[in-house]
Image 1 (cartoon, rainbow, N blue to C red):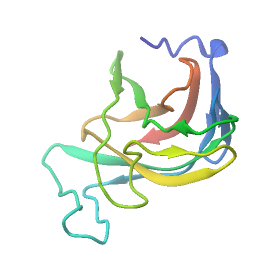
Image 2 (cartoon, rainbow, N blue to C red; image 1 turned 120 degrees about the vertical axis):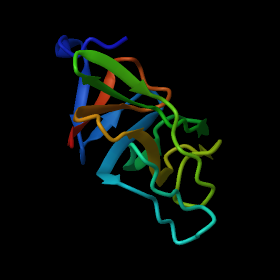
Image 3 (tube, rainbow, N blue to C red; image 1 turned 90 degrees about the vertical axis):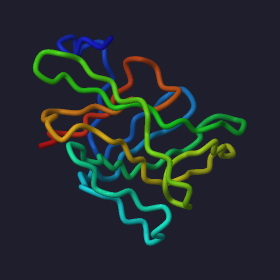
Length: 146
């Protein structure tokens, strides 16, 4: 699905930089790895699970279009041990500031939220994030995850 060896076809930004997509300017403000998720609401917390960890993206989305647009989570991509993996299912946390559950924002407005992806504990390497509704070559390099 993604040949990371052909980087010249990709528009790649880094954490803290803004990626301009068709409808949104997307910035990953911070990347964090956690064993569990503490939200401040015990009913929305995610517990530690054997063999997994949580990759948390603090992300800002700005609608640059001339009408309201729906936000979508996007996907994590990594090449691990010579195999490409795509993590396109984020964890659902129904609290303000966590996730993008059917969120829609008006033109020229922004939303900052935390996106949470459950990944295998064994995976190590450089992750990339492709925002939802972005073209296939729009990526944000998240850095090395150990």
